[in-house]
Picture 1 (cartoon, rainbow, N blue to C red):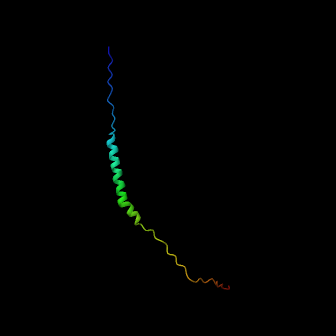
Picture 2 (cartoon, rainbow, N blue to C red):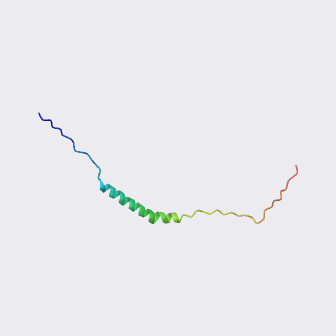
Picture 3 (cartoon, rainbow, N blue to C red):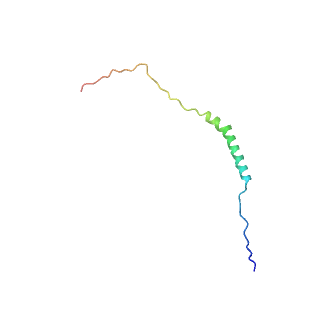
Length: 67
């Protein structure tokens, strides 16, 4: 008697190069948007510089009170 073996078909669900192309297109679009909008926004951010006021004269005479 002959033995018949039915192997199931492979369930390879990878979509191959189509997914790679879509990912590359999305990365290019995100990179373009970063260069067009992100870099100018970062360039316009101004960090506040501290203002330091130094008096022209400093009184170093210390007055001590007697108890």
